[in-house]
Length: 258
Image (cartoon, rainbow, N blue to C red):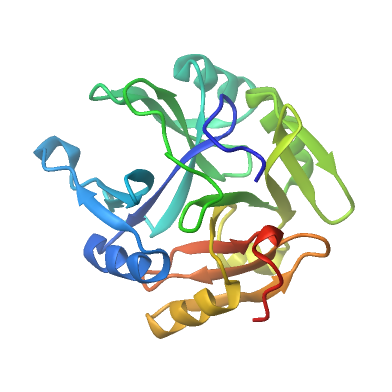
C-alpha cells in the first residue's frame, strides 16, 4: 500500500465484530503482537483498541445483533461524513446506520455498495484513525470481493474520487494514483460461501510462518501463501470465530519461502 497515513478517500481504520472479544484478542496478539485496551465507559459497549507499540492499528467490538456474523470492516476517511453518506445514496449504495457522532472522536456512518459489501465512513475529530500502515501488525492492503466489478467501478470513484487501474484479472484502487487496495470478482460458488465484502490484509514479515501460526491457534486457510509476480507474498485466512482476513509480506522484506 502506497499510503502511509489516513487521507480523505483512503482506508483509515479496520475493526472486527466478533462473538468473543477475549478470544479474538488472544488470537491476533499471537499473530501480530497486538496489545489491546478496552474502553471502560459503559456507553462504549466493550470497544477494544489493538496497538502496535503506542500506535492504534485496529479494534474489536462485540456482535450487537443475533444475526450478525463475525467479520472485519474497513473504514474510509472523509472530510464530511454526511456529504459522503449522501454520495453513497446518490451512487446507488445504502446507508445502514448514521451518520452519528462517536463521543469527541469523530463522526461515522455504516454503508454498503450496490452489491452489498459493507464499509464505514469516518470523519475524524480527536481520533484520526490508524497510527501506522505497512509495518508488521498494521494494515498493509485492502481488497474488495464482489460479483459486480463494473458496478463497483462506477460506485467507488463517484463516492470517493478513487483512481482505478483495471486489468483483465485485477483492479487497483488509488487515491490520486497512490494504490491502497484492489478488487477481485467473486464467482457464484464463492459468493454462496460468503457475501460481497472488503478484506483487510495485515503486514507480516513472513507470510508462510504467520499462516502456520494461525492454523495452530484455531484459524483456517482460505488461500495458501502466494507470490504476486514482482510484488508481495499474500495469503487469506479465517480466524477462530470465522472472520476472514489477509496477510501480506511486502517485497521489501525480501524473498519469503512458505
